[in-house]
Amino acid sequence: MTQNVKKKVKELLESGKIKGFLGLCQKNGHIGPHLFCDPDDLESMVLGDEERPGDSRYPLNKLLIHIARSYPDETFGVLVRGCDERGLKTLYTWNQLNPDKVIPVGVACPQELADACECLRPYPEEFVEGERAEERSSASVTKISGLDVKDRFTSWMKEFARCIKCYGCRDICPMCFCNECSLEAEELIHTGELPPEIPIFHLVRAVHMAGRCIDCGLCNEVCPADIPLRTLYKKVADIIDEEFNYRPGYSEGKSPLNILGSAAEE
Amino acid sequence: MGDCHYLYGNVATEKRVRFLKKLLAFSGIEEERLRCKWVSSAEASEFVEEMQDFTETLRALGPSPLKQAGAQRAA
Ligand code: SF4
Ligand code: SF4
Image (cartoon, rainbow over all chains, first blue to last red; front, side, top):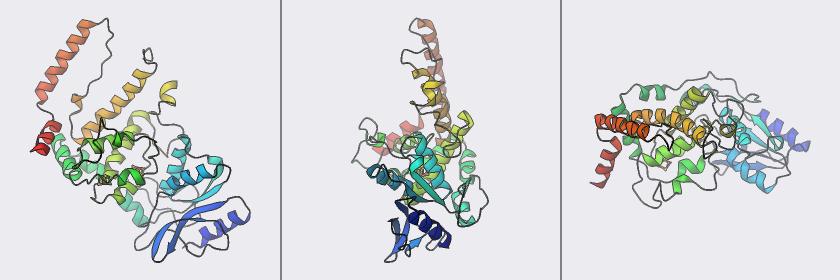
């Protein structure tokens, strides 16, 4: 399955177009992120499909931010699925990565993963591996929207009540790059105290994902309490689309809520 | 709009409120609990009217679900 990706990466490394390729490798039975720098050492490269498609995904573009900061003059390649490409695009608009220094190598997600993710676009613009799966709309959002307002509250509170405030959802999120985080601002959230303030903790995070969340679902996957965070952020993205005709990673340009960008200009 | 002491403050606020109302509704908090109106410091009677109207709305809605959730947490 990885043959085409390996071939492409080998070419890029040999031609000197990239300094390294940030992808996934399998070692000692585990899959993890890896920076491949030697064109003759790509044996361990995998796409993150261990038992089920895409069950070993990582926020590679988030890691790339850190690598790029340490080597600002170098160009790096990075493995992208549809969501990762949306992430890159959005990170460019927030000046977290320089598009001239990033070469994405795309893989399309299998239908099984597209279904599980309710993904609106389970493939990047260009891909060397996989086939274009069908897009899926969000049944989970429709389901909650169908409840009356009281039941919506009860159902979210039931979910949020399981939160152990591990901050995993924030830490894995490729769109969480702020130096100061509102989820640690004393006026809003009492850090180091359990149980967490619900629903405030989750709604604060949801608000901050407006104009940012590219629907990769990593938060949902990492959450030890299985809280359907992605459903909440899918709705956030729907609202921004309805109100401002903007969907991060799909639309061009900056978020309508970016104070330094369009809000100031309009 | 845009004619704000805090530069683009009201432009940003208007956008955020539009978004927040819908997010509140999805989260199960009545969106009528959030209201945004522009009143200048010279328009005292408009302000009073608005506040009276808002108070009526909130009274009709009853206690906020957040308050009940807080009470349960404390118990
Ligand atoms: S789906 Fe979750 S992890 Fe991915 S961008 Fe949105 S909030 Fe961040
Ligand atoms: S990952 Fe889940 S349990 Fe951890 S803070 Fe986020 S919502 Fe709470």
